[in-house]
Image: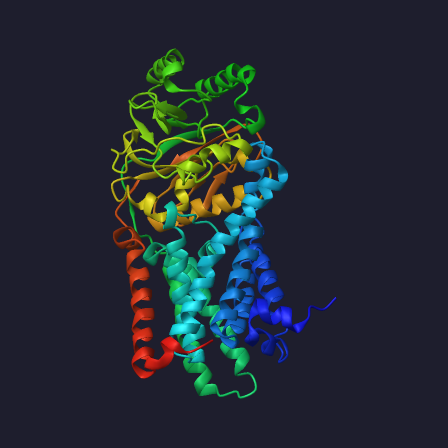
Length: 523
């Protein structure tokens, strides 16, 4: 059944109808589907080449649509990407939070609607305020604006930095830019490449070797540069390798907090740890102990005595109460020292708008969903004589949180509990994110998870060794402490975000100067 043109015109704008009648008839559907298919470029599907074509498709649409319709197209693209990419949140809210399925679906959908606004704004600014020069829009303005708003999405209301284009290229040549300019820059080069594909498509009938070569040259140089940067060692070895054992307990989330499971869990972790011989460090996952530290003192004291006997440090996840009786998600070294999680998960560990707590708790019963954040400037936790850059679960999704401990930290440690999301693609996406953080930092990462993916990650983002998911086991190996700093550690995201922001602002001022009436123009 076809919608009357009056209804289509009212929703998408009069220009939307004219574009429907001139060959772009299905741009809303194409935008939504392209966004959904882009998720296949991320882990665990790893079709990293696909992102160039899905992005090229919507770039073509945006370049041919007025600002209003282009921003709607961008929002739909973002909606398809987010809904397919972070649909796993449903498991934590419905399966483990006991919320009605309809409420869980609505919550995930609303979150995705919000996240898609950033994509829409990125495109609207380009189409509305920047010069209408097709090559510049496709290969400069859209990539720069995308980068800036992708970064902004990771900051507003503490941020939700997940489905970022750079993560699709962790095993590709473009990842060579990560230790220099960070993950956002990798995503920016992806966007430049997609824009170049559109330029080639639009010029296919009027082939001009010289003109096409000039357009292609920057893209070729970017890819060659990425490939040449990829094997560069930005950091250097310091001291002896650390012998590590990581315990993957594989405790189902539905059982984790049940009282009758607690003693078996404690005994399992202790027995597996005592079986580790000739190791310097043992690591347990996030909240491996399903209780508070003050109630587990005898158990922790016994562990400390056991570890002292074998001259081993043990890191474990546990909840700690502070002097204000607030709960903190923490990592404890049983031989001394504690790290308290600084960046909390919205709706999972804290409610962004406090007055919504009562309403939210009517539907969702997530344990420890209103906890406190740790101090931003904590002393680095030391284990096996090595200062560690610690992150708990969601924290490793933010470059700024990880590089905050560098270059002082010689190793990175991430402890997580992805059991909240069952056998979804979340664990694989999270693992790819952890790999990107190791690559940006030029450090080995020890990754300890409850149900997987537990792994050792090298300073180039390579997976050295990992355990299968949903199996109880111990991952043993050696990791080398490293010193020094990658360029990205020194300047973070600020350099590339600042340059892109200045570029957009500069061209906007140029257009305003040449066409001062643009502020009153209609789309």
